[in-house]
Image 1 (tube, helix red, strand yellow):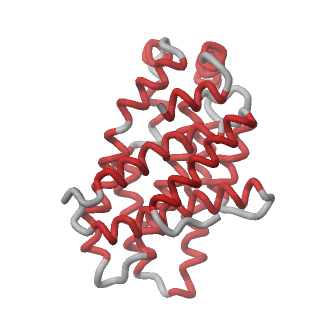
Image 2: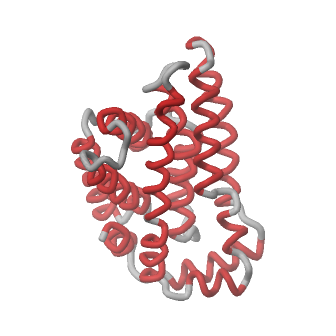
Length: 249
């Protein structure tokens, strides 16, 4: 199902969240986070936050459709990008903690999809005009991180205490930094928009392979981090549907 407006994006995300609760599916964790981000973007429209509201809604919808298409393709056994396929397949790994599921979704969506969406609504001569609003959508993402940390602490209060004790918080998220992801996505968008149309699919495939490799770093951790994550996973409260409710609240 492809969305045409930001309201339709929200409706699609609500459907994914609801079905994830029903199926007790960890894929709902990222959907719940993304729902909050989309609501935040919608709330900023018409309030002089963005330089161009119409362009920002267009970017938001195209950006969201990258995720929605990947999700519906995967759930109907159709091909999708390697980054998203690995993210979705990782929902079946029992010892992954909620934070890892969120990082996987953010990795695929920001590091791959955001640059593609930015290039799709731009030309060589207009992409520079998008930079300010491009950064603002990342500012909204970053502004939610404190809230996400609070949500994760509700799922298991000792999460960050344990990870800091073992000095493993930085190790786990070292391959995903908001600023690094934003700058990388912007660089990719500029490179992509300057590619000839006939070369773009191959250019995206090369980028997808790189982001896929980052996703493996999030899941295929060393022995110590695996032990720490296993302890955290056992301490996380509630079923997947309970955790989704916390993340979307």
